[in-house]
Image (cartoon, rainbow, N blue to C red; front, side, top):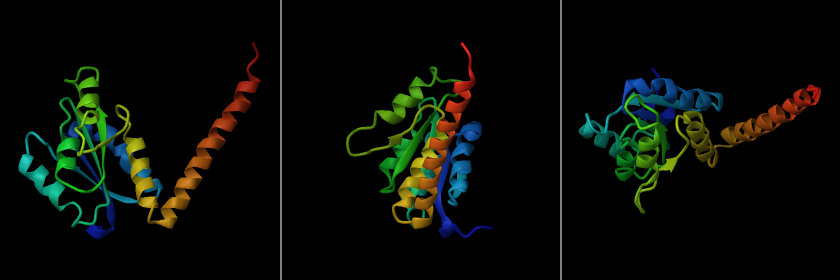
Length: 169
């Protein structure tokens, strides 16, 4: 079992049905060499558990929390209200959502004083990258991997130009 103090990012979601989206955050964090822990915490069905998690997350050594939720999507905001750690919200298009807009707006429209960084619908990978960038502020090894990631993105685009040049119109 991993030591809890090595795990820097908590990835939480309101339901296990959100896992196919949220696992992408864990995958990208792993590429950056950052350990994460995935958990299901429902703001509506397990409010005490959610509050205990949020108020104790810093004591467990977490540096960032990524919280995904569909439908009413209160989990990211409720966690943000009870912790001083940065919270990155991932709106998830769920089976009962209004094309994902209810999730987006529930996470995005937080009142002043309780911020939640918000990524695009189902964009857990971007949440993982933001979490890595936050950790990179105090971890030179992660910072180096972020720089390489950006260079790889540029290289991918430049390589795609070669393919476009081959297209005859």
